[in-house]
Amino acid sequence: MLPKENRLKKNAEFQAVYKKGEFFGTKFINFKYKKNGLPHTRVGFVVSTKISKSAVKRNHLKRMIREVFRLNLDKIVPGFDVSVITRPGVLDLEPGEIEKSVLFFLKKTKLL
Image (cartoon, rainbow, N blue to C red; front, side, top):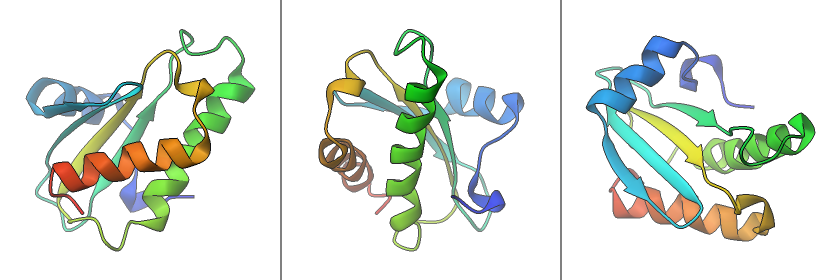
């Protein structure tokens, strides 16, 4: 689990990232990110019911993505807010493919 200081929790925090953040997208996962002026990076996850009607599957997907961020948290550049938005078809991916997608985003945006 991500430490509390590394989580986006409030709707206003997500909205700030959506309105002022930069976009980076892969085939099944989109990312919005912006500087937050804090000494740590915060991450939030969005998995809509369009992905699956089952809350169990949505929560499992969030846990998989969250774990990738947790394992790489010490390598991620501090001072950013990141919103991870999943797209339909992401449930068909293997956990390794999800990890590759997240790491590709972090490398391309120079957050890693």
